[in-house]
Every structure is written in C-alpha cells, then in structure tokens.
Image (cartoon, rainbow, N blue to C red; front, side):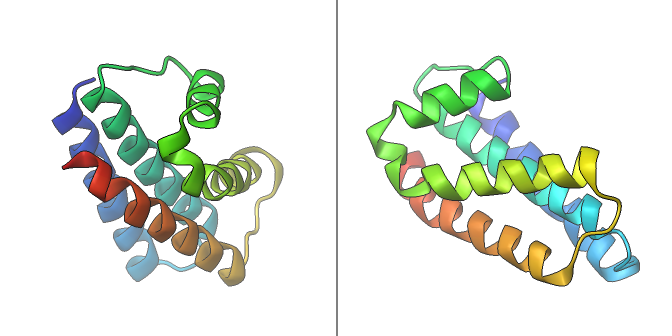
Amino acid sequence: MMFDSHLKKKSNNLDAYSCLNLKNPQFIDWEIVTVFYAALHLIDAYFAKNNIHPTDHTDRRHLINNNTNLDPIRNDYKYLYLLSKTARYDRAVMSQKEIQSAITWLSNIEKAIQPLLL
C-alpha cells in the first residue's frame, strides 16, 4: 500500500470510530479496534514514505523496535496493540477508561509521527 493510501485508511478508521462513538457507545471494543488501526496506518504511512512495507503485526513491531525515530511511540503502539488484541479476541466488554487510554496513545503517536511525514 502506498503512503497516501495509508493516510486515507487512517482517516477512514477515525471516521468509523466517530460513528461508533456517536451512534452506540456500547461498542467500545470496536472503537478500540478502529483507533488501533488508525495508528497502524499512520505508522505504515511513515514506513511507506521510506519505502518500507511491513507484512504483518510481527514485522511491524520489529520495525518499530529497531527504528530510533519511533522510540517516542514504541510503548504507546505496544499498549494500543495489546488493548486492541484484547478487544478483538479476549473480552466482550471494554471500559470507557480503556477507550480513553487508546485515544491518548493514538494522540501521542500522531504527535510523534506527523513531523516525520513532512
């Protein structure tokens, strides 16, 4: 996927989050998943800009862990990944506190990645 496509997917995921959040707050698990995928596509846009294309979650985590430009977001991404995995596979009910944490981690990732995309 190309740089612009990742930014579009990030935007689409945030739009989905907004719809879920406004229409039916009972779907916090899906809100967390859309926030995670927004972060994933933002990070993948950074990699695509540098002609790097992760093939899966394991590859992406390895690339993040070995890229000093991404040191500031390493833990935010890890926590968001783990929370989204919990939301997808382990627990049916997620809390408002957890979606707020997810939003905070995404915000941290956005602040760190945006300057790298210029």
